Length: 323
Image (cartoon, rainbow, N blue to C red; front, side):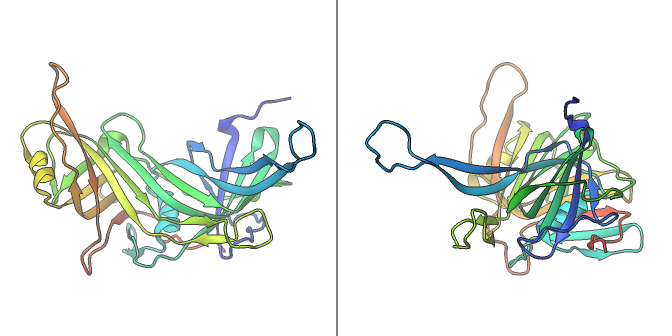
């Protein structure tokens, strides 16, 4: 009997309008999305009841709450990534006639987007359906290397069940789907490239979480509850002067941007208009080049200013659901 292999696993995704009702199997209505790791998995509590029976045996086993949560790590495909961003931020403001420019922004009162995922292990003909999945966050690291850029999206949902077959035998692919390599990234402060930056990271949390407290007669979540945005990250830089040290010490805010560019018409740029650095020093660890790392955080945006925007330039006209 063959073993299941990761390279034979396929991730299918489709937008889901209503909580608790997974999208039905249908050919040509799901996207097949590339991924590196998928650990969005179900869990179910088991506990022993503590009633007394006059002996030393454990109590009866009780099946408790059922949850579905985890993360998916995907390539920063400059066409496919827009699907994930639309699930996190909502519909973008799209302009152009090809190439297109999609601007995603963190809304003051964001609507929760849900999705149905199908996970098919093609080599062993085993299939699973996950429903009511919502994005709870995004993590990205930029550094100069020779690997394709990756993004991690965190998710929470309602339930996973076995499926008799793959949800979509002919899913839609984002093709072509160019992915920038690490060295194609850049970090800008106030629209100027910062000398000496060796690494930068960004973590955005939506605050969305599964409602496991409302009584619904089921062990699974009753709904997805909204939360509030939280945005932070870090910068590592070679010590070439006190610019970053001064900013951290005096609390001066600045605009931060991470960009990945593949030619003139393919780009992703994440812009945070106002961040502040946490105060830290410049350690000397030995005789090599001195570097220092600063944590940064974004606070409440000024009126009329976005907390964060993601500008995606590509050849995909829109990210509307497949019909």
